[in-house]
Image (tube, rainbow, N blue to C red; front, top):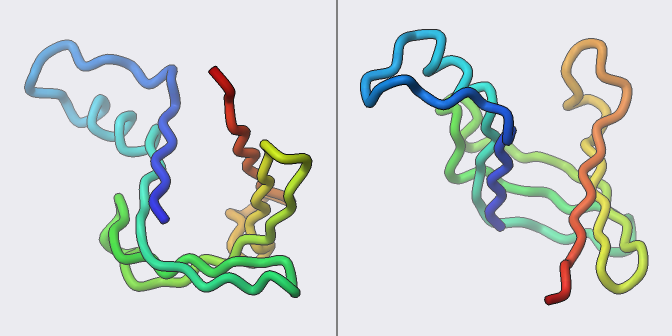
Length: 100
């Protein structure tokens, strides 16, 4: 699996040589990782084994995501609660297939 999510409001760089603040905003405004996965369908979760990640410290970790299909075109992934950042109670991502 491979996921890339970008904050559409990340500020554009003023030049090809960004300053430290611009680099930080770009880094913080992007989620990106790829890897293999194990599906635990009966239990309702998938484990992503991170092989490529924006942050080098996260390469090699496993990320558990609870999943639910809502109709034929929507997949909801919920972050396993122990992975939530401090102060975050629930983190959910909804993927929807768009027809042309």
